[in-house]
View 1: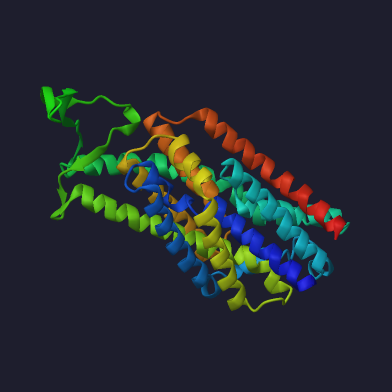
View 2 (view 1 turned 135 degrees about the horizontal axis):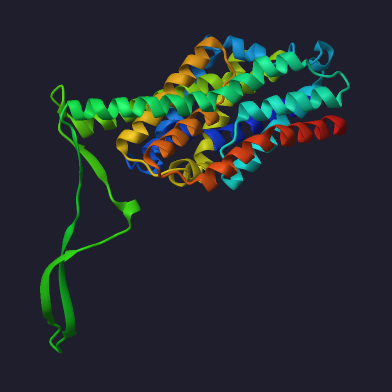
Length: 366
């Protein structure tokens, strides 16, 4: 029974992670118009699943970090109530955010849940470990992403101009025929025909690039690179998040690491496929408008930082990094909706205490 509860908590956490995080690596593909929602979601799911399956070989440091060792006393970590409470507290917080469209961090929720159970158990927490090992990377990562995006985008813009790649927009003419009546014999009487110029909302306009780079069309090359970086960001997310999700169940000895990775990866994929739409809309459409080049820049920064963090075992949040890069694009192009940004930042502040309180309640209940 206890093993089943622990397994259920892990699967719920993995599913919630997929629902809230799965689309973040490809948000710029959808937001810039390089892809539609369905294609972007499938690409994110495939790349994330691949990252999840590779996690067992490349992310051992994160498994150790999120087992709770060094943060709370070892005798508490070994208890089943601790594992169940942390899993359910973090999972409930992340799932609630996914259902309301707020992109929050599973890493942050897990940190809050670990701290909450540590306090509720009476064992306390190691504040130095909490600050240096968890809070500091989580706080710094969005600012690093924002700064890198603000610095990198002008460089790309200058390079584009140096290669004589220009931006182009288009307007559409459509043929029109107006029917005014139908004769008894069934023939339609045509009143006029001609061309129509349609004026639409600015948000529906499409900007592309004209020119070539190394013999390839600029827009085609950019789209290919954009998909590549989106896949890399999603792969790195699976690589970075899966060890955190399975850490507790592996430390409890309920499942072998290989089995835990497989089950968590599948649950993450299911969560993304079934419940990612609300967070996808927030990330892609509500934070800032973006063109293809801006979307690619934000994605490249996200992929670089998350891959780097995964390699070094740093508990950074894909959410904080991807949102930070989008904030940077909004700052550069002046199109950010700072009201939405403010709500997202508030949700980040609330994530830790909510996860901590929920985990503490579950711990006392079980």
